[in-house]
Length: 58
Image 1 (tube, rainbow, N blue to C red):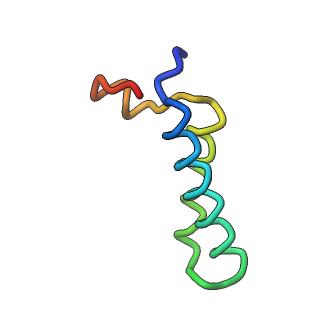
Image 2: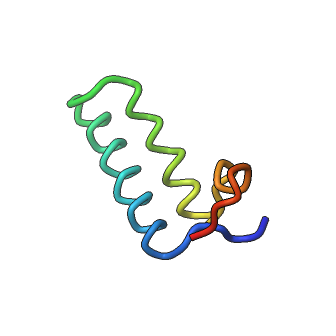
């Protein structure tokens, strides 16, 4: 896996993922908030499979 997610993109993904998970755990939103795991994982690995398919790299 070649890194295709840049620093600013990683920070944004991590913040979004943490916000979704926090909102889910506090009961502010429903179970769909667990989708926050996806942006957290892509931030942690600096790799986004969708970016590869679309040919993006930040």
